[in-house]
Image (cartoon, rainbow, N blue to C red; front, side):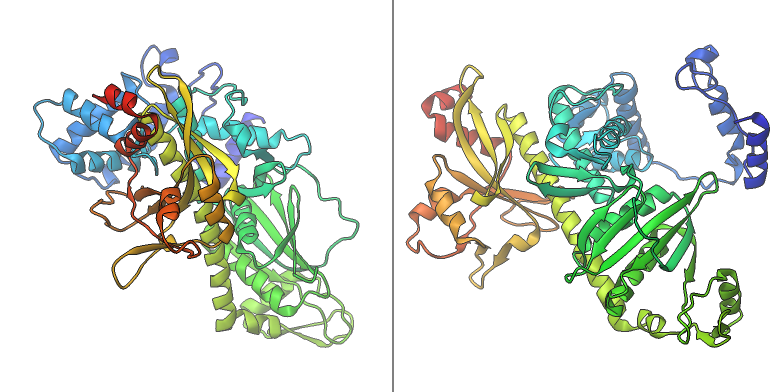
Length: 551
């Protein structure tokens, strides 16, 4: 692109200026290449900021000291990922004359997080002091999805955790920390509705709608029912829309393409949408189309959901309904005229074929304004959020198991034995630090709904599948039930932050000991799952030798 074109673009869209940079050569963006002085890019940014008009905030001296000490860890000691307790210990060593407590440190971490300089992970009480590392790992994952041989924009989740995964060009962490960061990465993708986690016969696949490269090979040109033109980051808007429609479970999944997604009703009627982006214009159009036999109620729900999503995630949204003459069934083609008449408050347009009136307020428009449709769209949104949250929380709980077992110098492995009610195993190391072959299985549950409190104050876990009761008592090793809850204080364990309260109990021993063998109710007597709890179970399994090691 020529300099003249760039200058015209800047003038047209109100940019103050531009500067050519190169990450490869460091041109205009490297302090080192500028004799140790701030690069030309930094200087241009600094000159463009209206410093005299910006609001300012005052930071108490203690918090400033804590922030500066953490920044020194980042920049000078190259510390990347560590447990909160370790961070607090290092800060006490760095600031021996300062008196502070845990809450002070968490506040300081939060302040750094607001500026993108730190990131508390949602499991293991871990703090990432270099959040920019996520960008490199995310880029590698997206690159792998884009390079899929079938061009379907997906990558096997199990492959991400393989040490041989292609992380070319990524500033990598040491392997144990890298595994934790990858869990956090997948959890972030799900939290932001950027991918679909789909279980297949080949294992779970992470599907990225924005990375589909297939062109939609359509044998017929669909009649567009309504279209939305909007401004914004169209790939994110499109990806989150497709992902959330996928998880709403109101429609069955049919096909996903590079620039289109097809869903269907329970009776096989088509509901689809496609996107056309205008390169360089910062604008895109999403068009909706339906099978002629698709019920009007489903059309309304589909349209309403897309409308709500764009109102939330995009800007400058304009809507163009495609109208058909009720007399001769000729589509109205002059969309500009329709828009202008609607802006003037007109209620119809004249058919260009038979001169009959084509009303703007038809039954579709009336339904879209109804309370019942609004309620249905809300239910779809809640269903999508719940399913995405469930998958995200699963990553959080697995990450916590990895962190706690790693801190106890034991081994945690996720496993795929869902039919048996088993999600992972903990293998204990012997006194030589070698894998002993002695292990336990764990069933992982994340969410407040898994436990209910009876009138007698006891917490109860209701087993949904009878066969799990048999599986849990017939395994060669004991099965532990692990439950994560949030926003509560229970059993004397304080939930300090959004990582939640995580407890476990030996469910195999409980089931074997109780008198009522058929009951699906498990009285949950869980203890906090931490390093000490893992080592206590190791001691009970390995015997006196493990106890002697601890002593």
